[in-house]
Image (cartoon, rainbow, N blue to C red; front, side, top):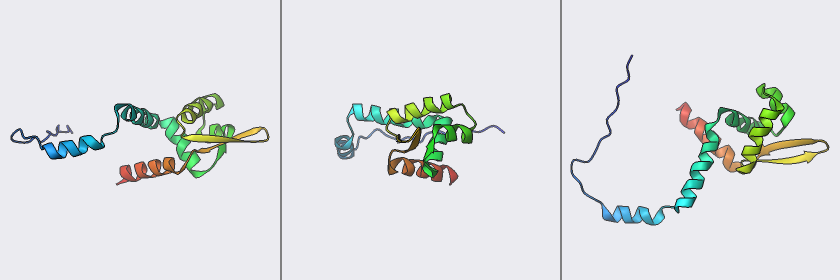
Length: 121
């Protein structure tokens, strides 16, 4: 079954709503902040990283447990955790010889929860 391309609806005539454009323009973040936001969301574009974040949303875990649960090598998990840590999405703590990872803060849990809720609608 072929899916029809939806046409984008356009205004019938050209008219700039200057007051609206001005108000929104005043609220627009700086270009650098928008770039950082885009980089932040790119992190969520990888299924492995999403799996790791989801697991950490449920429980703090060490690399070995994450590797076992996700059926991946410790090296692969460590690589992804390094990326997540650089973006301040996860944090770690040492307990003896083990290092446990968890979500950096409640914002990450909110983003994941709302994302799941959106796709399940």
